[in-house]
Figure 1 (cartoon, rainbow over the protein chains, first blue to last red):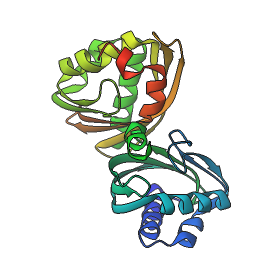
Figure 2 (cartoon, chains in turn green, red):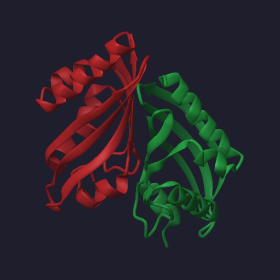
Figure 3 (spheres, rainbow over the protein chains, first blue to last red):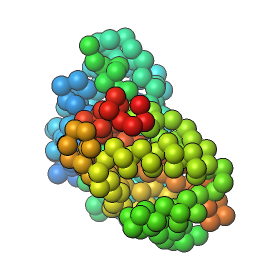
Figure 4 (cartoon, helix red, strand yellow):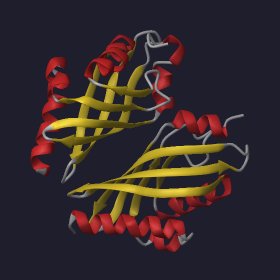
Length: 134
Length: 137
């Protein structure tokens, strides 16, 4: 698979997320997907490392319960070989606190044979803690 | 162009690793825009190499003993290059070990870096360098 193919797959993943199509996301993943969200799990719901499709499905359930996205825009894709870095701008409301989070994050997608094998989020977790924290 | 830019960025990480700050600054465009994550003790937007030196490189080298940036992956095929790096060292005040993965995104024009954007788990960095003990505070 070329870097362009991998970018296309990443775009399909974000489009599936945008329409709430969880099966459409899961079919892009390897069975042994490793999905890493940064931050303290006791404050930020879904933070931590999730292994396997069931765990990733669980993460998306947690995300939907905790966070209401008003804006979720993949704005740039940087790709080479098996790696894609996507830059995401999002604006959301934390359901438990009502606080707004405006976030710019980098997502690293690492592919194996055309499927997503490792996904990792890099973001300013201090802003998330401020939004989710007591 | 893409390969050339990747080699250029790798060369600047190598220069930083051997402490050759003039070589790093020499790779910056005069009007480089440096976006340090807001949640860092050094958070903010700085313009120009001297501002980056004073507000980021200087304080972080004081706050983190043996501060090192290791580039694990450098990715790109055009004028924007992403580097997956690791920050390591020891917090001077806390004595805690720093080991945090970071994404740097570099924009390159005419063989110089014009923009830097940093994506980092700022909570993890703050465990090693809390904002109120940083020399930047």
